[in-house]
Each structure stands twice: as structure tokens, then as C-alpha cells.
Image (tube, rainbow, N blue to C red):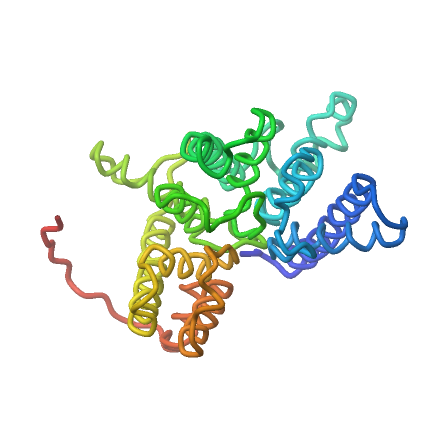
Length: 346
């Protein structure tokens, strides 16, 4: 999406710098919170999990992921922050950093600084950033409350309210494609798995380390539905009208995601008829959104089913639209337009 080569250079420097800064800070924080072992071992442990969290990989050096840290809220908090920042992406983070820097009262007085403000007024975030933050916050709140309500007498039973709140928050964050877990996913009831699948399907923000259809896609779809119900020609967000291509891209993204998920689930049901549908559906969405959570059926899958999951993980990481365009897009552009004719939908 860069407009010029200089923008590409700036974005690459920003990506490398932000990634290194957050992963280094996360490694130091996690090493300080771990009590056992030498400092070098603790630092290596912290660095591994910091990178895994920021990159939304979900790999852990513990066999139970972070279930053993359910009563260490500081550790889960650091992991959650790294997952969220990595999921916000490299369009949102630089915009937030510029916004905070530009609004320092000590700098507003300098005319030279005001002239170099990229042509934008003070105290304004882009629609991309504001929508990403709004949808992310809504998903985190809904996921935390929903998980606690559904599992307070289930997987969270026996914990005090602080530990329950921490675990519920953590389980609302990690389906953003991080793949960690503070509870045994296999013990979750079906309704909780459906909630988790919804969070996994949405995933993180565009141009981030996460997968899914992306938060902005969901926001654009909701805004488009709201505009259609009100009889407006364009979707509107934060005082701005969205172009038609954004609405169309969001709809196409959702369509191809559902097509890939449906095809993979059909094949898994065909190859593994003895396994429960809910476990296969959870496995499919987790793979397509590159999350890595599982109810425990992965070792039971045959070679054909594992190849299916490998394929959908690849599609999910590259992006459903990118994967289809790489195969089907013609190098020739059409030099004509057809006459329009309306159809009835719905």
C-alpha cells in the first residue's frame, strides 16, 4: 500500500525497529518474572516466548503452554501485551507513535515541527488505526466477558476471582492467532469453542503478524451493513466515507475465508468420520487463522487430514485473497465495460 519507494524504506525500518524493541522489552520482562534457573537461561526462555508472542506463533517451551502460569498475572499480562501489539500491525503502531509524539505540548509551539506534520492536523488518527483499535477493544471485552460467563463453573472452576479474570482475559487475547493457552482447551464446552472460533476467524489487524479475516474487514462489513439498512450509498466510519473497493474487498475476503474453511472441514469429515464435528471444525478454523489451538485431536488425524491442515495454514498465512489472485489473476486488464442490469438479492 505504499505510495512511493521512500515510504517502503520507512515502513521496513519501522517494522524492524518496532519488532526488535518490543521483543527485547518482552524478553527482559519475562526473564525478570521467572524465578527458577540462571539469569542466562531465564533470558533465553524470555526471548523465546517474547518472539513467539509478538509474532503470534503460539509455541511454548512448557507442555501445558501457560496453564502453569494461570496464577502469575504479570507473566500472562506481558504475553498478552506482546500478542496484542503484534496483532495491531505495522500500520497502526507507527501511526500511534506519531500521534503520541505530535501531541506533546512542548512540540506544538515550534513552527518547523508543525510544517513537517505530514500534512495532517494534530490529534487525529487515521480511520485504519481507529477502526483497528475499536474492533480489537470490542473483541477483547466481549471475549473476556463471554469466556468467563461460559467457563466460570467449568474450566475456571476452583480458581479465585482474580485468577479467573486473568485466565479469561488471556483466553480472549490468544485466539487473535497467538495459540497460547492458560486452560485445557479440550475441557471447554461447545459454546466456548464456538466463541473461540469466532475470535480466531476475525483474527488480528491487517499488515500484522496474525491471521484471520482481520479486524478491519469485520469493521467494514458491519459499516456496510449499517449503511445498506439506512439506504446510504457508501459505508461511513468516523466521519469519513469508505470507497466501494474497500467494501467489495471485505466481502470477497469473507467469502474466500468461508470457502476455504468449508472445503477443509468437508475433507476432514470425509477422512476422519469417527471424530466429533466440533473438534474438526475447531481444528479447521484454528489452522486457517494460523492460531495453533487444538482440542487434542491433532495426534489422531491421519496423513491426508494433516496435509489438508498444512494447506489451509499456508492459505491462511498468505491470505485467501492473495492465494486465489496468485492463481487466477490475469495479467491483461479488460478494456471494456458491460451494460449494467440489476438483480434481486435475498
